[in-house]
Length: 74
Image (cartoon, rainbow, N blue to C red; front, side, top):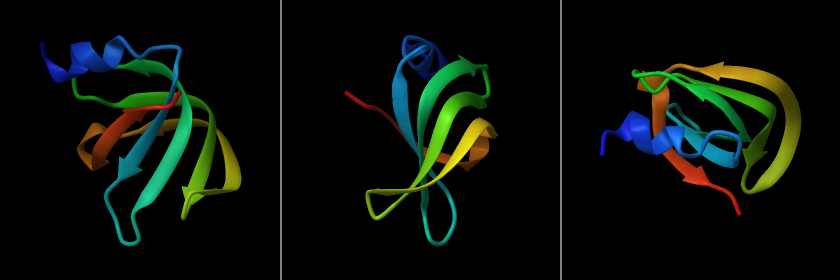
């Protein structure tokens, strides 16, 4: 299964996304859409620092080449 197809099965669910950068950024939100490049649109997004929610970002679009890890939240 292609990665974009696997991620599409997570649409409408809450996910955590680890982004490139120093320090590493982790965002948590509801996956609204994904394309073939793994660009993501998240709703109700919050930023996590050391596991603690620091700020609310709302609607966010993430570029696929900056994503390290996508994890479903239960």
